[in-house]
Amino acid sequence: MPINYIRRFTNRHMPRWVVLNFDLLVAALSFSFSYLLIQNVRHHQFSVKGWLYPLVLVLSIRLVGIVITKSYKGIIKYTSSQDAVRIFKAMVMSTAGILFVQQFVLLAFGTKIITASVIVVDFALCLILLTSLRLGYKILYRSLAKNPLTVQKNVVIYGAGSTGIAAKRSIETDNSSNLRVIAFLDDDKQLAGKLAEGIPIYNFSQRFEDVLHKFNPSELIIAIPNLVGYKKKKVIELGLKHNLTIKNVPPVDTWINGEFSFKQIKGVNIEDLLGREPINLENNNIQRSILGKTVLITGAAGSIGSEIAKQCLWYKPAKLILLDQAETPLYELEYQLKSDRIEMVIADVSNQSRMENVFKTFKPEVVFHAAAYKHVPLMEDNPYEALKTNVFGTRITANLAVKYETEKFVFVSTDKAVNPTNIMGASKRIAEVYVQSFNNFLSLKDDHHTRFITTRFGNVLGSNGSVIPRFQNQIEKGGPITVTHPDITRYFMTIPEACQLVLEAGAMGNGGEIFIFDMGESVKIVDLAKKMIRLSGFDEGKEIDIVFTGLRPGEKLTEELLNQHESTIGTHHPKIMIARVREYNFHEVNDIIDSLCNREERLTNRLIVTTMKQLVPEYISNNSQYEALDNKAVVS
Image 1 (cartoon, rainbow, N blue to C red):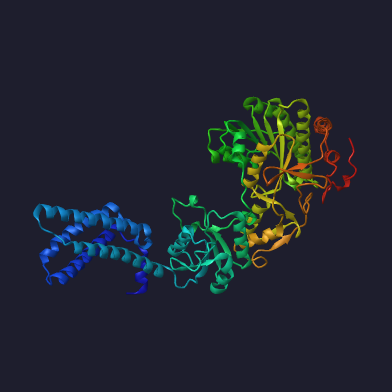
Image 2: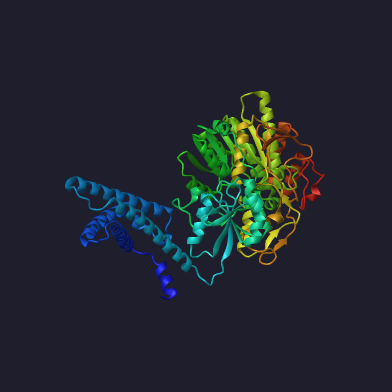
């Protein structure tokens, strides 16, 4: 029979009625063989009548067992352990039925239809045949379904547990896959030297290099769903070092209908390269600060605001007010969250009357103020907008929080506020100064006042307009990737990680603190670009180039979480510290901001920047048109 005909035959899904009849045929052959074997051994004779009647009885009861357990409904070429279990149940159930009928006939008529030895031999033989023939068909299908002209790539799976086995099976059963699993790697030393479905298991830390030299794999699949971040980072970087394509099996709870398929194996995320030890939060502390309260989040449609909103919902606030001036992203967030605790508000934080109405209507007990303009080059060209939203908007929101007796006001700041070299960073530093000096001013008057807390952290991976989405977009277009400078570095956090720390800092803060977060090690942007190219399956310099474009206006090579005059105090949380910063007189700060507000229509870019430099003397422009104003800030 030609091989192509066999391939076409095995590729078809066999109809259920064919499988059912095939199973009955196997059952008939099994019983006949068992009957002949026992009869010949014991009596050396054969009776057609003595064979035919029991055969009809056995097949009838086997049919009932097969139908009840639905063992005939499995797709034979995808036979799994579940199919074997169904066959076993069908055989046990039908054999029990045969024994019951046998006992009934014996009691009623005093005769045996089938001897016990025939029943036992038939049970074992039929079970073996039904299971083995299915597995044989599956093996034949696998060997013929693959295109013989396709060059298969060797794959190593990290993780020899149930997820790793599922990944192996999905690769083997997918016709489109050109992969071949040749080894498992695992950290469990007790598994080393053993086999998992015929595939050898090696200890990861001791034998990784040996496996590479022995099998020359082209891919490494990570199949440990709960692998901690720093460990995952180590595995990925080790794989990239040896030019392996790294892929990842998603968490079990994301599998489609609880089943795993080859198409669910995806490339790892760049976030995995930031992996560090997991953050342990005081969830009870956060819950006490959120549970049953009305929470307002400004800038709720942004990357940070939307994640704060999602995490806040876990702690069951009475009402969650999500405020932003961006209509479409806010609408999309409402669709994602789908909660009756949410109120969506379109508003601009710099609009006094609109914000007054919001506070008067909802009277929030907790405010997370994340609304801000954040893009450095844009704000260099539009200083008034930075001032209006980042400073005036923060002051309006803070003042209303006091007026309507908000318990806590958590201000989301940035590392760009430290020794700012651009308008965006300077505007955020002025907002920091205002809320901290306001808190100190209020504490002199009354112990029961709104507590103002500031959180300061670096870049978040995947936020709107950040470097990661931009690099991904450039890679999708075939490059080049644009990096401003070969030595530029940044601190990075994942969005969920940053927002967890914001909630924790907000819960622990007593007012007046500027909390800074442990951002881990700073990352060289060019190294990040190179790793993203590799993770995308391309070669840097051959398929995707990296081009240096020069620092943008206001941009600096390295970001800082503290300036030279600041230090830190530890907290009960190892990832959160309190910055000891210069304190400002509230009245002086308020008067300067007032003077800007009162001259709003007459403000020029130079006047805005000059006043900013007066209020924040460490603000030194870099690669900017405003460098000429340094050391010349005067009161205007």
